[in-house]
Image (cartoon, rainbow, N blue to C red; front, side):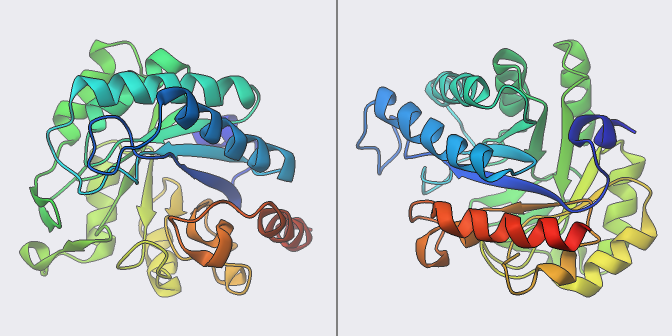
Length: 268
């Protein structure tokens, strides 16, 4: 199984989120690239030293997001990701580029030597806060083969956060997961309604029973509720590792260490 080969375990993999600072060209950009890279590497080192199982880089500070991602974003993300990879040479490293820049994320992953991407809009359509997003699985997997990046795994959000799913209200999350599996997703991601909001543990159970591919939790996992998600193949944690539990704040090294200490106890 590719997931096991990558992370070395099948359950309770912990992936730390690196929310890099706003990139050049985005409305809140204020730092030089050297400063953005330095901060991303500092956070990566915190995660590495605390014993997380992997990290993922995301341009979440580039608000408001757009479906038209310029070449400067790909160039900057490649620079950041290559540097994070050098800080974490033995950890699985992934990338997500907002919004729904999935092909660009694959290109960045290939150029930076990364292991996986997080993709939005893989199957079915939904209305995100950026607008209407249609399924991309066919084009995305063909692009992955075209550029020779088939070793880069694609973990895909289903019924994703910050979105309306009225268009597919007659399609359950289990059916969405099965569609993603049928369309060759390497793993599906279950989230709450917004960043930092807890995913429904019942959805984790139902989706896990519906597919044979890995099921990840993509939001809302904390020190206090992690027992509800210990059977997930992986959890991606950003907000809880920040001061005050807010995604835009700095990473709290003690919070990361405390959480990882609990995880090691639960794994025994």
